[in-house]
Length: 162
Image 1 (cartoon, rainbow, N blue to C red):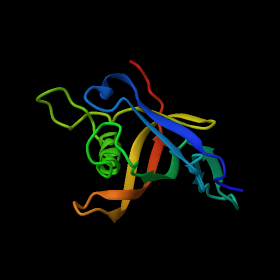
Image 2 (tube, rainbow, N blue to C red):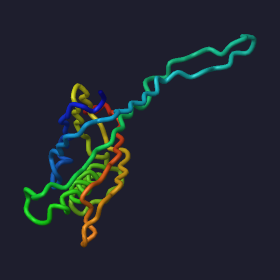
Image 3 (tube, rainbow, N blue to C red):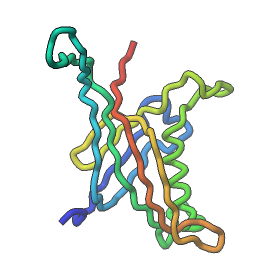
Image 4 (tube, rainbow, N blue to C red):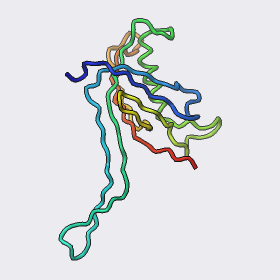
């Protein structure tokens, strides 16, 4: 039965991009699905006089992993404060993983997004966060959401040190 066993996963911020952010975001969830998309990188070339195109391997393409996180506010917030605010803080932490972290006084231009380590069960990848889509539900009087579903998409990257 899909989703019957809880799986604990986490996202680590690698290198100096972790300064000033949560260095690890942990989650426990029952995945209904993990979607993976990989462009294998073949291209076609038309050759005059041949009845079919010729295939050339141009290199591996992008590899993406997409899944949904289920966020539910606990009865008590371990960091103190309103427990319902914890869902919003968790979403804010996820948003921060998609932004570059320039040096003080610098701009976001020309900086690579934070490189992350994604671990879910047997999946272990070096990635960048490319998309986050939170859907907040069940609000309290202060409009803090007690439940949220967050679709996240990560792109696998290869880090090359020069």
